Length: 176
Image (cartoon, rainbow, N blue to C red; front, side):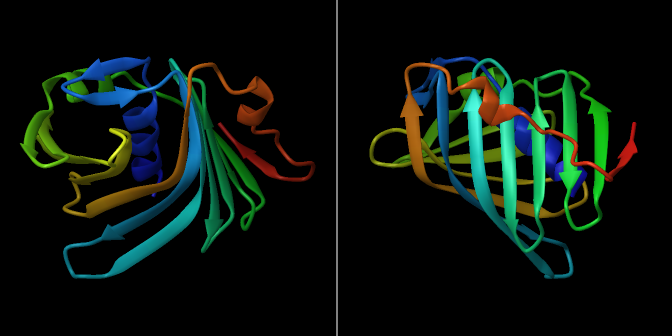
């Protein structure tokens, strides 16, 4: 799951840009649902809320089926797992460039764009306003990952920095 969280973070964390009609704003918030289907057909489903500030502040709040918070500044990642009462900290390696993915995305049909980046094919679907509605890809473990964004609110100014804090709850174990 951490690989998926990292991929999600990196996919969203970028500056404002327009790429072939794909608009990633200065900031946004909204709800998301994520479905991961493995090669044997087993499906995992997650739901929650997401906050994004350009260039790289992101916070994913998983509410179902487990409670987690995933925060990143673009260089560091914190994962608070409330079920395990554990906080894990990671350094993020550069390796995925969302601006390049979006810049290279080509219109496939209607509001669907595709692009191949680092041997992974990404499908990006925009809503009628030209905002990101869905992102799908197959990861290097042959899982099909589908993220659907709802109630997205694009903004022209950054969201308050306090929304991106992942404070370590008292008594939680820490892993570096």
